[in-house]
Length: 136
Ligand SMILES: [Zn+2]
Image (cartoon, rainbow, N blue to C red; front, side, top):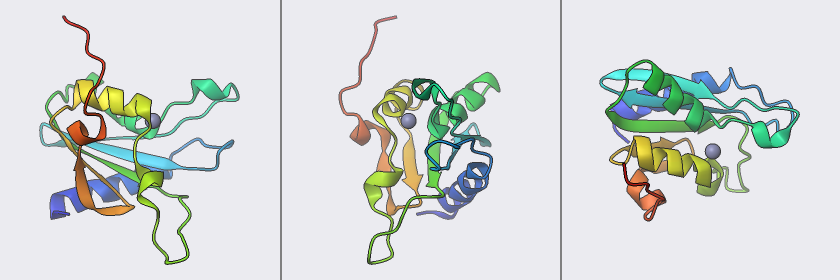
């Protein structure tokens, strides 16, 4: 992980403290690096569970509405992910859900993704190799 990726992950960690997760108690923060600027987001749940918004989509929307179009990378930090018996957080616990992968495929297809559960960056294209695409 590069120093820039570590910095983005730290921004994601700080954003996770702003999560609204009274139901899952699984706070997640995300930070998007776009056009040299950082845009953060956190998960926001709702009593109507299906209306919950993931941190990744919150951060992507944040970047988009503030003009961040060329997304270079995204960091995801799961504050409450439980460690296994070795003390490590299982990698799958910090990876984006399917809906977020679809958002990433459309808004950040060339981006890398780092999490607090893996020292190795992922590529968005590897996380969702065959996304839905609608011809514009
Ligand atoms: Zn998601």
